[in-house]
Amino acid sequence: MRFSVFTASTPEWTPAQTVQILARQGWDGVEWRVTDQAEAPVPGFWAGNRSTWPLSGLEDHLPAMATLTAGAGLAFSAIGGYARCDDRSNVERLVAATAVLGAGRVRVTMPPIDPGANRDAFAAARRDLAWAAGTAREHGVAVLVELHHRTIVASASAALRLVDGLDPAHVGVIHDIGNLVIEGFEDPGYAFDVLGEYLAHVHVKNVAWHRTGTRPDGSTRWMQDWAPLREGQADLGAYLAALAAHGYDGWVTVEDFSTAVALEERTRDNLDYLRSLTG
Image 1: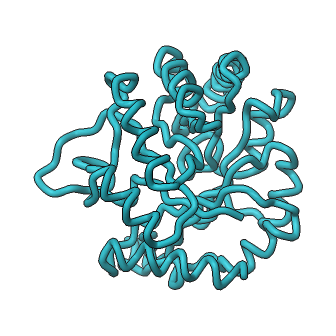
Image 2: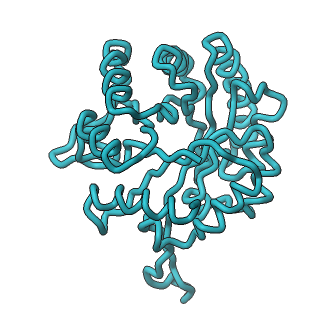
């Protein structure tokens, strides 16, 4: 397996700092966050993130993305796009940019759940994804669907229903154990078997649930929060072992949104931990 970092989780670093530090620590690759974001007085994961490339005018930034990445000796694990599958113009823009960069794969996001309209939303997403897969084929790349809580593909089973029958050379699934601790968890070995050739990419983070009080009926109220890789509820050792047993030998991309440890120490320790689990 090869290890990379998704830059949504490195908001304090500029792109140049990101590749320099990751290369020095021994990471194999980087997964750039690409989206138009809000400004923020302090860099954050979702606003003011300094390691994010803008979607607007993306084409003008491609030479710098390529030069920085290759110059540090890193590979692209994928492009972390945020264009939703029904935003066809921006999906096509991301697909084309991925081809120019030689990055191979790009994430396309799925609709959130919408009570009363989920069946229609799922059918529409299937049509949009089929179109995206065709566009990806024309460019020689693949689009990726991430398992994500509060969306129509919170589980591997749901994702298979969405992608089944499409060309796995040009559409695949990102299995994300952290998201699945929140919603959609299925036994990893079973999930990998279900996805089969559609298992194209892996994201790793961790989550812990905490008691936050009681409801009016007296029952316990719970809330999830991001946790360091070593401390969350997902058993990452068993998870990576299940990946290996399945025969997966691709990218494992870390997106650690915990903040208990300073960023540079966090990324260094995450790589040491993952290597200890796979060595």
